[in-house]
Image (tube, rainbow, N blue to C red; front, side):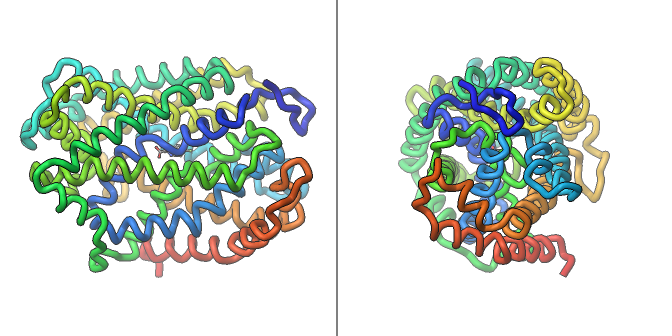
Length: 456
Ligand code: PFF
């Protein structure tokens, strides 16, 4: 399927309304839900963090995501070109796109490594040697993997090759076909694991950790991390949704699609939380175990389940699929910029990006072994890229997107862009959205950033 671009060229696009939803959801849902959400929530005190995360999703995530998709669909182009065409001549708004490309690289650098662990776990699960409800056994297995430089690097490069291969097939056949088939399966499996986790002895403690707020744990930094998670989760602040918006059909209702994606994404995160926290307390793991949380608790849940072995293989396969949808959307950002702006062919652009990522990503692959002692601002490359993107780059991108839409583009153009083929049934939505984008959201992001980074 093709859409006529603003430039008159024919572009690849999503072929159906469900395809749009699945692919966008495929970008949002990923290791962010299954790996990051539980460990960040666990490390920051549970329910109180969750409440702030929800607020950030509504007040910041929703308006920014709608804006990005809207801009993308309007310009039907890559991030840089989109902002170049939509901004008045000579104004450097395209820099948002350039910073987005940098953010995409930094996220990919550590994300591909977590994906590498997930892929490695598929094989470990097949062999059955990590299936244990003893915390000492499961943590030792995980440490063994991440501190082995050769395994870490090889798995990461394998992941990169896989993503590159899928992207070569293009938007409709590559991204859309894969995500459409596998997303529903992930929901089902998380439900099964959640049900098992909830019926473990002592599960109630996990639920109360997730649902009874302890406000004493909340600080400026915690609020920043919650907001950063909202950006990361929804794949916003760096042009991914601008890029995907460019593949949206003209009759797609953007606010409705956004709300659906956000709710489904939240649902998956909650399911992951419900699968993990009861088990954490039941088996005596630490909720604040950090990035290792998923990899040490989940095997324990499976160890206590009939057919646990089979389920565990399935779980890590689906986690790998979820990660793949997200990585496709990340890599699509620089690839589409190269194709759109520099007229490099798609295969060549893909290959070039993979090579670059292999290089940058290695610094994260080795962060738990050879490079463990190399620290910038007290963090390893892995932690630094993770922190910098969620808590600085994406929020900054978010601020500028809000400002651009509200102050430069204006309400009238928003009205037109959000009306689907001339039918405007959402005038009040645009007014409310414009109000948020003009002052509330950018100021809120700025305040949270300054407070969280200790600048005020
Ligand atoms: N939203 C993805 C996740 O939660 O796993 C991660 C991600 C994908 C972040 C794409 C940013 C992005 F552009």
